[in-house]
Length: 440
Image 1 (cartoon, one colour):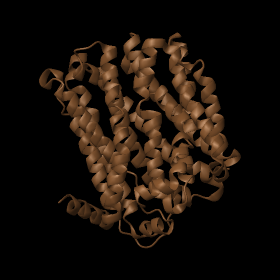
Image 2: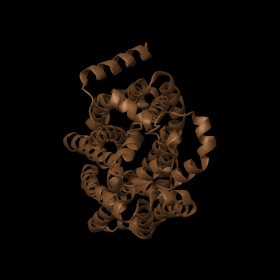
Image 3: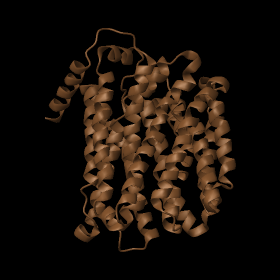
Image 4: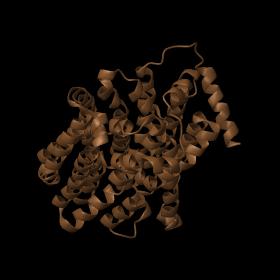
């Protein structure tokens, strides 16, 4: 039944967007990529923000706030752990039923898992059963994200003008700040207009409903591209077709491992300027959460400006050089950055501003590194697996460990986590000569 329904949707997408033969343009691919990534990152940030401001009180009211937040963050990596499994499952669906069917099923699973979070009862109703249900939905999100890989980012990189590949490679990353702006804005609005009791009872649920609606929009936007004959032929001519996961891992394990560690500096910084400072401000200060979410929106705006700059720099000095220089800058930033959070309003603004600019410069090219590290025959599956592992190692456990070491060793210790990501990136770039040859 599910396969039949998704096939019908795929056919409807073809009919709705039927066109005569035309030249495939990078700009058209870019639109689909941005819409899809914005939807995925919006889901990510809605859950991440709720992990700080909702779930500790709703699911774990029987412990103190810090412990409750750590419990909440312990559920956070479940999605990242499930992603590689989802990739393997949905690659099989892709090979058997096609890219459109795979994408439809994955995004419906993602939307359903996300919207069901909005209906979860709290500890007072189900006890620990509420946390168990949340964990199950988090796994569902991860499985779906593993299947949501559509290959459009790889296709964009391959079809971009030769002297503008760095600029086009940054396009998928624009979804992160866009998703953060929308998610933070929604939570800031409900926190500002509702009493705390009403927000915790029902106000926090609305962003999850919006996430489901965005997933539906993203589904049709992406199907509009992937199911058309022109793109189907282009995917095949570029050899962007699913290969078997086990065979890809066996043949490309070195590229997968190096590719997973190459962007860790940006992924570590990703959480150090989004989820971690929100948790620190919530737990250790009396500052308004809504106000800090507005600061995050402003920081995301700076990131949105810095990402295209990373593309311009990559086209001028090489993508690998941008990754290396930005990792070195992040390493330097890690020495003093966390302490700025405790230095008052000026220090907080400096931390967020500098952090988001560095994030834009580094994160802007992390997608390009993953794409360029594989031969054509393995690019579709290899890039998906590399992305899964990079998010798992660089992002999945970051909120938990950053808060944990801060609690026991002080705020300055959080810089050690950020430094470890920068060192991992520099080592990966230094060891992988093939990556260096491909990116320069």
